[in-house]
Each structure stands twice: as C-alpha cells, then as structure tokens.
Length: 179
Image (cartoon, rainbow, N blue to C red; front, side, top):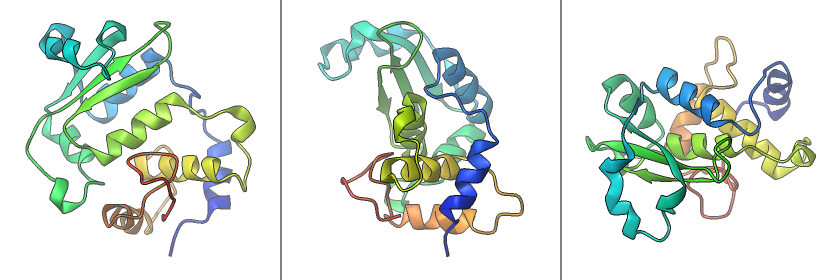
C-alpha cells in the first residue's frame, strides 16, 4: 500500500514550500530539522583538489554531529549504509542566493533527497501525470514536508525506500523509478 499521489498533491497545494530554496531557507531547514552546525570552509580545503566539488563556489559548509539529526539523516539508508561516520554537506552557489550544487561527505539517502528538493522543480513540470513532479511529491513526503495526519503508511514508505525502491528524478537513483 502506498500513499495516493492525488492525496500528496492536494496536501502540497496547501503548503508554502520554497521552489527553489534560497541559501537562507536551506540554512534554516538543515539547522532546525537535522541540527546541522555551520562550520568554516577551511576544514574542507582538501576539496580544492577535487574538480567535481567546484571549491571556488562553495559558500556554506555544514556538519551533522548531533545524534538526533544524524539518526534522521540515516533513516532512509539501507542497512549496509548505516554507519557512525560523520556527514558533511558543502553547498555551492553561483549567485549567493540559490544553491547551484553541493558535495556530500558520508552517506545519507535522505540528505540526497533534501538537496534535490532544495534545487526545486520547474513550474511547467508541476503537473499531475508528469513523472518528475510525482517523484517530487514523493520526495517531499519521504522527507517530511508533506505530512499526512495519523499516517500509518510513512514507515512502510521509508521501508520500501530502504529496500531499494527509488525515485527516478530525486535522490540516489539508477535512472528509473521503482517507488
């Protein structure tokens, strides 16, 4: 049993979810939901050698050490990806307003969904029947933006995701939607 996409859509229409998120929106979400700590970029100077990190455009760095946030960030991870390692997120921005990319150190399937959500979705794609938009709604549900009262399906949805049922357009994916 899965949450009905129409139910997710109707709930989505009642919410004011930024699209895309500003750097300030991201900062608030990471600190309040996952107890992130903003840290100095100098801690990640080793990324200057990584051509994919685009170190010159990194504007924010976060670490997730608080157990409450860390446990949240691991709740979608399959058992083989559970660890006690630290999770870090570095955010790139080309305009100092919106995220243009990011680098995650450590594994968090939930944080992968979050960073995709932060980037937003094109307004013209926000139509029921569009697989990308429906994946967006599912990602919002899995990460807790869309909250269905007395929801007995959320734990089952988390379990399905942990077992490898992924979204095509959001999170770690193999290019197909099986969720």
